[in-house]
Structures are given as C-alpha cells and as structure tokens.
Length: 206
Image 1: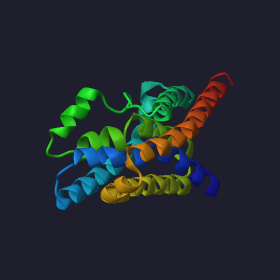
Image 2: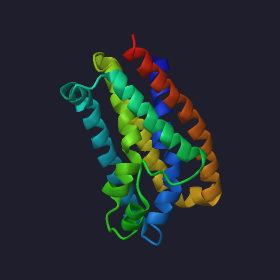
Image 3: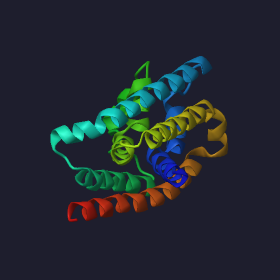
Image 4: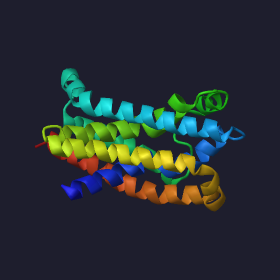
C-alpha cells in the first residue's frame, strides 16, 4: 500500500510539476501586493483540490456511462502525459496546458486563481487523466481511495507552499534552474506515460 502511495505521489507530482508554477506565479503576480499573492495562492489551491476530488469521485462512473474502458483511457491518458513530458524535457510552454493567447489573457485578469492557476496548470488535463486512471484502480478499496485523495491534497499543498515562497525561490533557482528541474521531471514522466500506454494495450488485448 505504501509503495502504491509513493508511486502515485511521484506520478502526480511530476504531472502537476509544482516547480513550473514558480516562474509562472512570479510573472502573473509581478508588482502585486503580498496580500494579493497569498489570496491567489490559497484560492487556486482550494479550487484545484475541489476539481481533483470531483473527478476522482465521478470520473470512473462517467467513463462507464460513455462506454469507455479503463484500458482505453490508460492509452489516451498515457499519450497525453507523454506529450506533456516532451514539453517539459524541451522546456517549452505546454500547449496541453494553455495557449499563448490564454497566457496573455491571464496577465490582464484581476483574479488568476481559477484560470490559469487552478485550471489548467494545477488541475489540468494531465493531472485529471492521472486522477481518473488511479481512481479507476483503487475506487473499490475505501482505504486506498482515501489515501489517494490525501496524496492529491499533499501535492497541491506543496504547490501552495511554493507559490507563497516564489519571491525567495526565484532568487535561488531563476528561470534556468526551474527549467533544469522540469527537464529531469519530464524524463521520469515520459517513462511513466509509456508504462500507462503499455498497461492499456495489454488490458485491451487480454
């Protein structure tokens, strides 16, 4: 059970990529007051957690209603995660999270908690796909499911802490340092994405 929790923590942490939030949050809140930054960090974390829990609770049922097997979703989710991993490895803005137009629009918003922080950066397509895949596997085991939700909350709390510490972290890491960490995480995510696809193909042809 502990191994499963550790595995999901690593996968979900890499997919959400809290380190990439540091330069993003710094850019979106440049010149803003400390009170505003704390409010946006806290509000976006709560919203992202609500979205994640909702998908964990009803995601598997939604797949059943749509007639989509878990194996098929593993293949689709693995493919999406692999695309995100490529963007991380090459340190380029991920089109699977937001477009250039959306990022420019976000800079003009007074409230950036829902968009783009909570969605699509913290609870984006990759994170939600990972949640659906894991929830489908542990949904019938209440203890595992509760632990799985705790891991989701833990990763999002890490995001909240990093956003609050952004000014100090930017002085230490800088954009280059954040990109280096993101590249290393991308390699791990690529391997995990391939494993999702392999598991999905194995389940489909079993």
